[in-house]
Length: 121
Image (cartoon, rainbow, N blue to C red; front, side, top):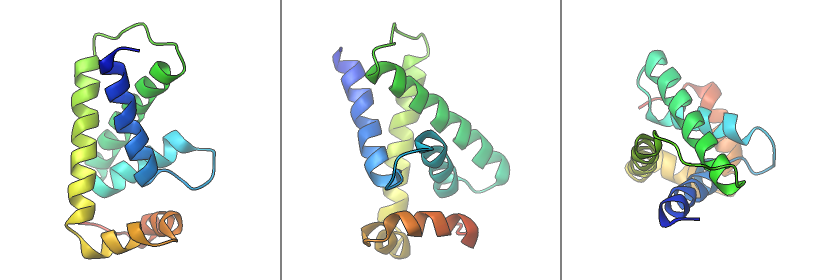
């Protein structure tokens, strides 16, 4: 792996730790959904954020599973991944209710229920 590949992968390790489900399965969907929920102000923006997170995670998967041959969009994927990471952290750290949910032992349940509660900015 190059340092760029490692750096990219580590961003997603952090995002998985913060937003990933407790169990296995549906990791790409749940991560993408949670990114969209936390960062979007409209349904259209949520769709775009969902697609962006999914595309970026798919790039991560290619890297860590050895199917990576380079991608001309890598700089874009890195910029998007950095923005997702930064904005998620700012969102959580600046909202006491979110921070409490993320720090609880029921983080995954909190994130699942947030979807149905219509939690918005």
